[in-house]
Image (cartoon, rainbow, N blue to C red; front, side, top):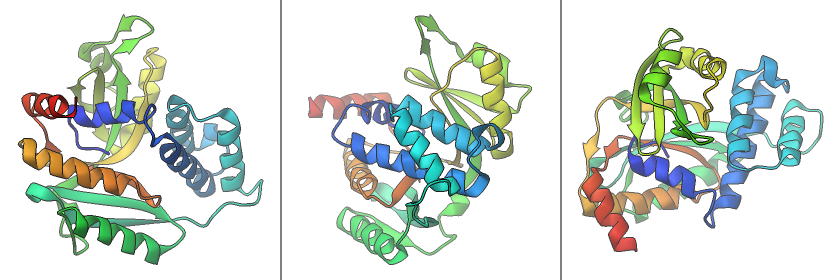
Amino acid sequence: MSGHSKWATTKHKKAALDSKRSKMTAKLIKNIEVAARMGGGDPAGNPTLFDAIQKAKKSSVTKDNIERAVKRGSGAETGGADYQTIMYEGYGPAGVAILIECLTDNKNRAAMEVRTAMSRNGGSLADPGSVSFLFNRKGVVLVPVDQDGKTVSEDDVLEATLEAGADEVNVLGDALEVISESSDLVAVRTALQAAGIDYDSADASFVPDNKVELDADGAAKLFKLIDVLEDLDDVQNLFANFDVPDEVMAELEDADA
């Protein structure tokens, strides 16, 4: 989920610990398969595959699972599915715009499941193009602040990536988000590596032009919808134009405690 709030970062970290770990692992493996099919099985010559593998490693996907996914995707081993990318557009509670990116081997199943999840949880699908214009394709790199006991600052990251094409660095709790043009994503990621700065993920994402600020009720309803959508096997990524203020996030966390 990419909502560009602290909640998104918290969710990313909790996913490795909660009951959805197996689903996340399956989606990361699917990412690797598709990247290997599109650009070949050599990460050195396929930046998309390199980043898919990096993300999987950071989420503790085993080396064997990663290697098998690369082999299936590149055709070196049989058993890979013919996945297609489909983007659905819609609105959630409080008028939040949502892009739902699916990787599926069954378009009809994906469409039905996404439509049902939206309609039962306060959302609705929209016509193609009616939501996507609210977003821009950007490169997004997540950098942990704490790196082996050392603290990485905004200035550290900006200094390392500015010449490579970084547009801005945002603080998301205990992570830093580096945004660039999508065409500069590999250069930004490479600049971080050259500076000895570790990163959790590097993705071409959809970043909203403007965000809808949510109160506790709107945020709770939206998070429920997101949870249901993320639980669908065909849903690979979600992008939404919401923001949750710190005090609202604290209120929700207290309610869950």
